[in-house]
Image 1: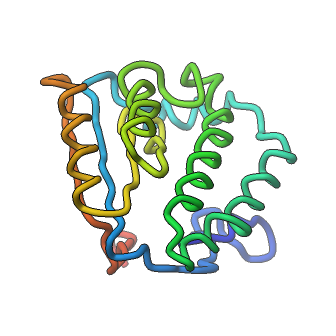
Image 2: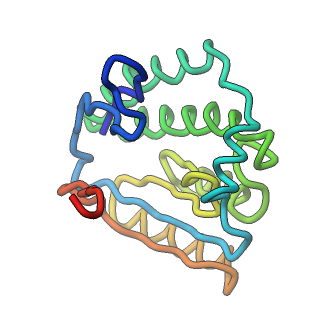
Image 3: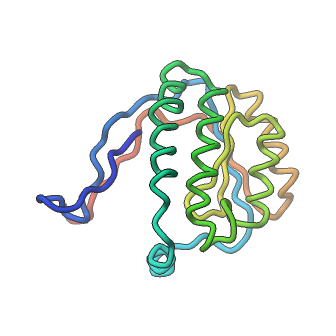
Length: 182
């Protein structure tokens, strides 16, 4: 799913969702491994609002780079089912955008087990990796069930009883978001 970003002014309420520009299915054979180390939860609620207020705006050159990667590499790779190119683009976007949060979280990825798993998942065969929001959840993308199972097993072994690992195909029905009371 590609959103157009939030716009202000001219009738665009701040709580309005970003306009949906594209929604493309992930190939049915692709899988995701999500590892959630037992650690301090990522920033949320009022602490997240405060953290965002303290962060400098990302450099325009980096936001332009991310937009370029998404439009010229990630989405075309998705349409073509090219997992290698998709994974490389996803990982690069995660490193760039993670750098924007480094002053608040201590690095491009939250330090600790999740950060180590990001590197290890790539070494263990994930085509692309990333962190969910402020962490501690991290994920790796694979191209088939067997690779995904091996990746999940290695992540479970690495975490031991210090976290949870989930492995699954991607949902092709999307999510539904609503505002309570409407």
